[in-house]
Image (tube, rainbow, N blue to C red; front, top):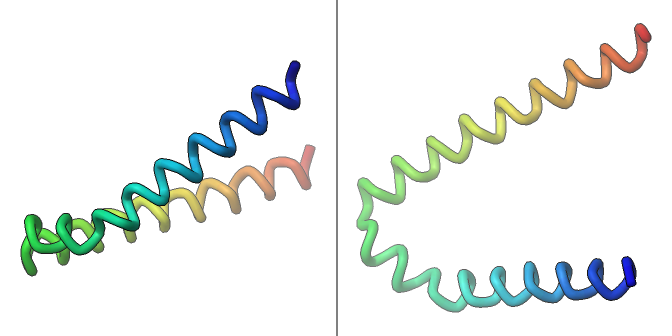
Length: 64
């Protein structure tokens, strides 16, 4: 049962990614240059925050 749920979840994520990739050009046109810049910077900040959290979690795991 768990394997079926896992495979279903993976398939759903793959389908969602495919839809976003197919619509990427349209999304880019809708957002415009400024929207793309803002979105890129926002996602960069989120990625940096996640990276810091991973480092903190790793240090905590090392020290107990």
